Image (cartoon, rainbow, N blue to C red):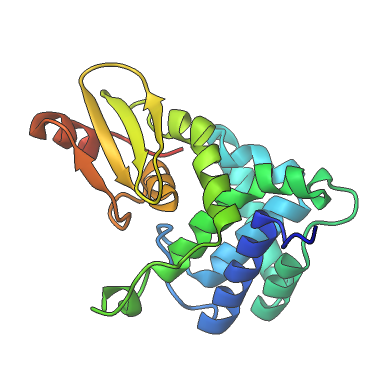
Length: 220
């Protein structure tokens, strides 16, 4: 039976297309970054994995920043986009589809939305989210098991996700009182990654608890 491309590959191409279409100066939702900065980050993350610990360990962040700036100086913006589009080098395990999905699906989806939902077009009345393929949407819902726990670890309230495209609920952070985040899986992922300002979700619960979640340092 024929199958389509893996979800991470679909999101990689969508992100590469957006970067190429909108150009190096287009803003993103990542503070201080335009598309050029994001492209350098993506290539550094994938091609220079020794710089990766600085993405999660604060005291090593300077190493990652310097490496990303060096990557930006070494390549033009179109070159960076095409390097990213081509995928990982042969020696990385992310060349294999299941590993690629686990490592990159959420990263590429979130960054594509960082580009799509920044700038004036996202404020227009006829703007609407992408209609994701089913494999990507299912992969993002499954990714909430880990991403949701990590993203809401400092939420201060229990958090439950409820998807709206089909029946499905998932506890992201145990505890009481509880706030429910209701929406499509991809929108809940955006909220879990600190993009609550643009995520199209409904928060359900006591108003004081919802406000507590809104004020919490949500995100990885």
